[in-house]
Image (cartoon, rainbow, N blue to C red; front, side):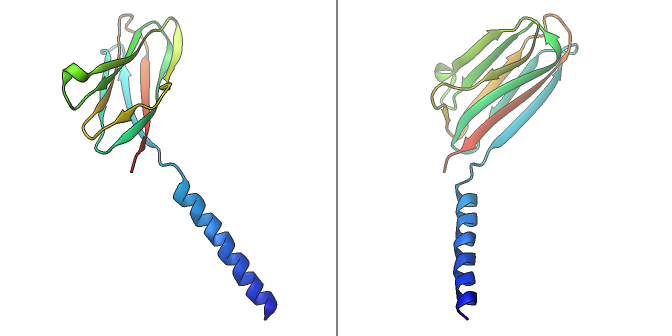
Length: 135
């Protein structure tokens, strides 16, 4: 009976550790967009329906591109509060990553807007924006 009782306690401890790990696991929201640059420039905006923290913006190209990528914080409070987070002139690049140095907190209705020019009319770009909801 003592062995069964000890096994039950160990099972409860393991179960508690398992569920604690799940409760503390970060939830990552991923938004994506694709644009064929032979057809036009990339212009994508992700609007947030809940308070969130921007983790990263990633752009991958199907081939080396020479274009300009711009990432903008588009405030729900209006254009006076919009802020360019980054502008990068890519030269024969196949990827671009923006990870904010500090925390970039987004309120309900705020958006992250990303553009990529198509001056050289070549390639396809794949955009991924990752954020974490704040509760």
